[in-house]
Length: 76
Image (cartoon, rainbow, N blue to C red; front, side, top):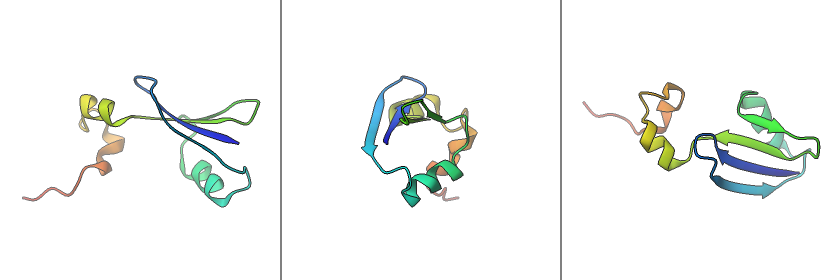
């Protein structure tokens, strides 16, 4: 099965990998990710919609609260 990561904002293809559908990592990925970011077509191709680094910087973590964990620790 082909797994493709695409930016949900600009549409840029970030990565792709060929994997077996019964691979435990694929099962873990689909179990942890929400249905709104994973799309599986009739041929079995899995597309994962995320934000690329450029769009992440443009949008900023305040507007995308679900990805705030990507920032490093803040020192007071």
